Length: 63
Ligand SMILES: [Zn+2]
Image (cartoon, rainbow, N blue to C red):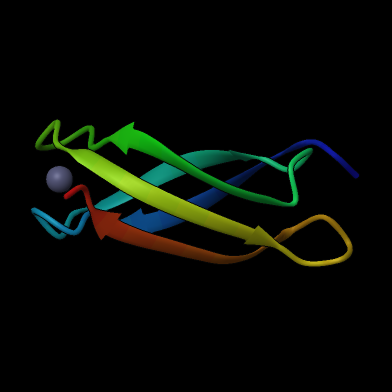
């Protein structure tokens, strides 16, 4: 399974819940996605479980 999975995260700036799409073809990834509410850059750290589903999605503010 290497598809796309939806996940909900909380923006670390405005605390709104945002739905994102995770590319499950990469087992561990860090990337930046702009918040759709406040437009600030959220650093996402995605860890996938062995069956290819998002296991842990961490968010932090960009330094
Ligand atoms: Zn935001």
